[in-house]
Amino acid sequence: MRKKLHSPSALIALALIASACTSRTTPLPPPEVNNVSRPTEGDVTVVGLALEGASVAVINERTLEGTITTPDQESCTSVCEFRAVLRADSGDALRVWQFFETEASLNTEVP
Image (cartoon, rainbow, N blue to C red; front, side):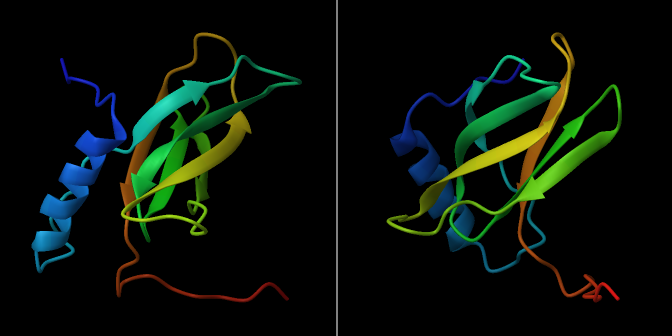
């Protein structure tokens, strides 16, 4: 069972350890999830803290649908607040992780 980080200072310590690595292929710790709202009109909001510059993905394990968001960069130091909204029902399991862009990504345009 994983121990949940409860303080921003613990997440800051993890951020410093992660930033000390020169390789971005090193797995990142999961972001800190502070709150998951009850479903409202079929949507839930997940709020927490992630590393500065990271993207956060949240997937509903039942539906295999989710969202990717970027934390608010204003007044942010090494950890930033993120907010993700996705479809979910009470009791659904959500998978949450953070990552940095990689060179293997593809940019495309909507016609």
